Image 1 (cartoon, one colour):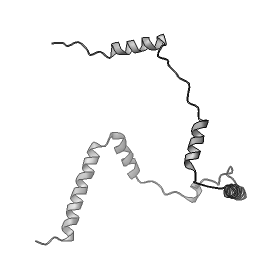
Image 2: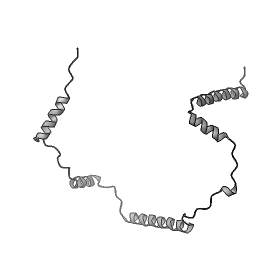
Image 3: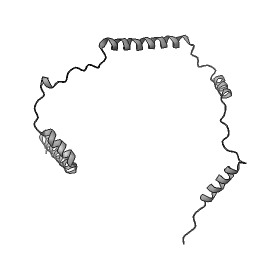
Image 4: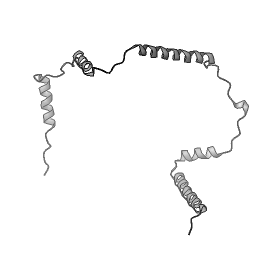
Length: 134
């Protein structure tokens, strides 16, 4: 038997119908109500319902000025960056200099501190295995 396009269309339509029924059965009541209200006939909008042009928007000339100032700042930054020499040589020297300038953070706890000893003792007590019940 040769498959015909009509057969595939009928099978696809059947699966789609089953899927829609499953979705409709699982849909909450709010969703079903929203779908039903969206399907109701409504009047077409008219030109009278188009809102007026807002008055608090930036005029075109101000947009043009803002864009121009951003472009000018970008060109200035590019020119400043072009003046600097970019090198990728002596990375070990750079790393050594950075390490020499970096200072390690101060030590937060000390081994001889009584508060540290008490904390360690408390943690060890909490870490013991529970007693066996059998």
